[in-house]
Image (cartoon, rainbow, N blue to C red):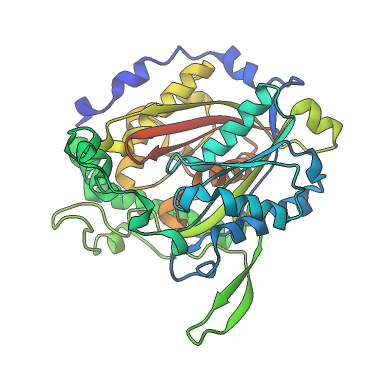
Length: 417
């Protein structure tokens, strides 16, 4: 049902400008650059190797790994921002403790951000803005989630009568799976189309994992695992657990719908519940050069938008055109897109609506294949995208995701590797 798609958004984009694409590749002393971006392996929520670790412990391990890899003097870090969704208070107390446990000095402050599934990206954006404003020269952004430890009804406070009776406000409580069904129904996306998209995600991730592609972006971390007898052992976690081999559209077609008898959303074409974290170290270009830090990329711009809560999954279809327009780019100027696969319905719709070449989308698979630790994903996409741009010798990349309650976010980065 093409007439129902948001094609008007594409028409708002500025005409293709070679000069705009060339301009964002320029290098200036005040650029915000990325000097490191890593993630943990993603493990299965409630079952995997990170199930017994709190989010702060995952973060501590990532901080230690980042400091070891970059050899940065932690005293020069001006601020730390951490994206998180499920921890009480978004984890500020324990995440401050995580920095101290990683031997980051107490003089380096920490704050946390919760904008649902974009929280990791929000951490990156906020640190970038602090650098652009001249508040700091070097900053650390992170995203982390233990869905094993923190998933449950306590993640959302009860709505008052005023909120639950308001026709628009009440929509913020619609289950995410139901919003996926709403997108599929409203925009005419069939289960066959969604299963084909999901199978492609699994197949790309399987190929990448077998080729060792993810090793460049994953920091192995130590995890404490408690068995059924209460015995504790320490294991090294270095590989994503959720990637299933041999998935096909036919195998996915046999899975029962999850939210309604005749629905199209199911466990095989939606993101996996998982645990994991990611860290992104940013700096002013002149500061990075001064401190001998290797520059791997440049932060260009970002956009956050609002959409109807009941079809929250269309967020990328609005956010991506918005950020491209801000930068004076068209969709074809972008080499790769990392679009979070919260559900096949919303990711597929966003790609089709904008008119993105499917070959440019999630070249190594996405959250359907290896998981979506809510507060982590936005930071994880930075590590994945920079790895992809380097591997295929490409330059311009976009990250994006839908956001619960009806929002979307997107960013533009440039590879300098």
